[in-house]
Amino acid sequence: MPPVGCVPSQRTLGGGLATRACEPKRNEAALLYNARAQEMIAAFNNNNSDVLVVFLDIYRILDDLMERGEEYGFSETTRGCCGTGTIEVTGLCDSRFVSVCDDVSQHVFFDSYHPTERAYRIIVNDIFLNYGHVLFS
Image (tube, rainbow, N blue to C red):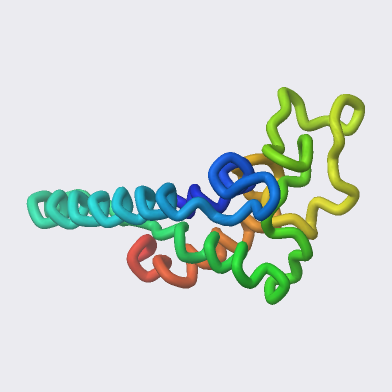
């Protein structure tokens, strides 16, 4: 799981409209889930030699994108490109119907939860760098 307490919607709902801080309890839950998932995957792999299940940690890289976004070339790391500017929730992200940012490449998030294409490319590159040796061996 990603750091769900820091996605735009949860910053607004859990972190407050004024400060929009990360909601730590949601992040703690995500970290606990990830730890348990890793334990289950390790147990599965120990009992199944013909199949390999790999845990891909997206928490770390997405957290890094939000914390050090400017080092990746992002100018907006806490708000989505599409939506209201607070929770970034809308039925259809289309500039004919709702507000959409001028330059999506400057945003880590496209909407209230999902990273932008540029952020996903960084996440996927990180996965290949850190897990490629396991995935392609």
